[in-house]
Structures are given as C-alpha cells and as structure tokens.
Image 1 (cartoon, helix red, strand yellow):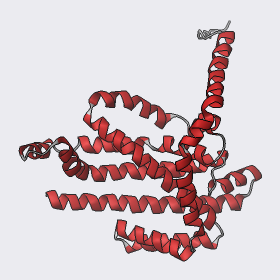
Image 2 (cartoon, one colour):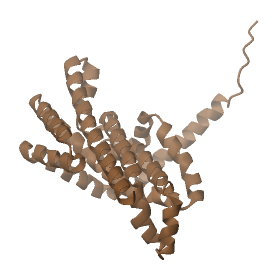
Image 3 (cartoon, one colour):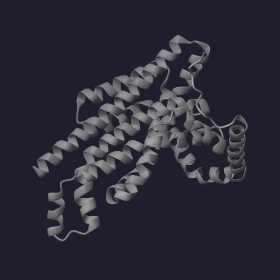
Image 4 (cartoon, one colour):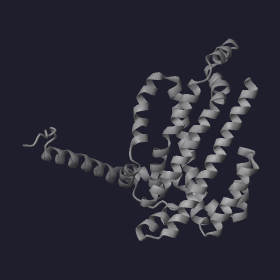
Length: 295
C-alpha cells in the first residue's frame, strides 16, 4: 500500500483557465501597446547603433589605443594595460574582432542605462527605509530569477532584436549597482555627517560632497558586478537576436563546432577579465585616495 500523500493542488481546469487568462491578457497588451513601447525605446536603439558603428567601423589600432588609454587611466598599471592590448590583438588575430566590438558596445550601453536608472534608485533607498523595504523583495526576485525567463516577456512585448536583448540585460544586471549604492551611502560614518551638519551643509551638499564620494569604492564594486552580469546575459540574449560573441557560441552548440565555441568562449573570458581588472583596480585606487584624504 502506498504511503505517499498527494499534495492538494489547484484543479487542472482551474489552472488551465488561469494560464489562458494571464497569457491572453499579456498578448492583448502587447498587441495594443507593443508599437508604442518600441517607439519609447527608439533613443536607446539609436544610441546602441551609434556605439556599435563607432566600435566596428573605427580603425582597429585606434580602438585598441583608446581602450588601452582607458585601462591605463583607470588602473595606472602597465601590466593590466599590456594585458588588455595583448588580449585585443589575439581576439583580432583569430578573426573575432567584429563580434567582440559588438559585444563591448552592448555591454557599454547596458551599463550606462543600468547606472542612469540604478544610481538614483540606490540613493533614494539610502534615504528612505520604507522604500528600501519595498524595493528589496523586487531585487531579490530579479537576482534569483533564471536568466532565460527574462527573455519571454521582453520578446512578447518588443519582438526579437537589439532593444529586446538590451532591456533583458539591463533588468538582469541592474540589482548590484542599486544594492551597492544603497549600502555604500549607508556605511558612511555618522560622525562625518554630524560634522557636515555642524558646518551648515544642506541635504544635497551632504549627499554629493560627503556621502557619494565616500561611497564611491563600494559603488564601483556594484558597477563591476553589473558589468560582469551584463556580459553573462549578453551571451544568453544572443538567442533573441543580440549580435556579438554569443551568436557564434550558440551556433557552435547547435552544430557541435568545438573549436568555434572554445575560441569565442575564450574571447568572452578575455573581455570579462579586462573589465573586471580595470574596474576593480580603479575601485581600489579610489579607496586608497579617500583613505589618504580622510586619514
């Protein structure tokens, strides 16, 4: 005799009706407002196309020089700068330059959008505890939801293409910058804030002259995580038409092209290491600078 006890579940007909109701409402909404939503995102599409053309159509020595200069200014490390140049030269030598530049431009645009949206939300959360309690559950869901699930509603609303992929990447990658901005501002010493109050500083002066500068190293850690998540999601978003290194990897999986998959995978790893080392080193330099100034 079986000892299993069946868990009480919703009836099959009720569940089927609920699914049809939700799916039907979502389809109706996408049919009626899909074009309007697409037009709202036209500026982002133009920004992405401009960035992609700039990266892919500029002479490769100029692009490598510009990236190396950014790496040097951020890290002040000749090892990181040399590693950046050698990695980009290897990527170009093995014929992955165009796809890599498309991936870099997508990551750049997604990171900019994530910062524009995430920094104000993080600042607002640090100011109001009630807002923090309301937003934290949403951030928890965004960080634990499987990345493939983000593609479903975005594709239904915006179709397949760059914009849909960009929105999916931003939603997936934005939680760290929000959380770290909130955390960094809250960790600022209360003694420093009391000193600012003693000098008659206003709320905005305390925010932009005391809290944000001191929170910058923590915020940079959040930006680093946002960049890494953007890179990971860009590869997955290749399933809905996002161009770059993800598409050759997807093709390699579908057709069992081992070499193609490995080479493009290593290119993704190389780009990830560049972004990670440069942003981390810049955050450490900020930390040391602030320790000297306030030490």
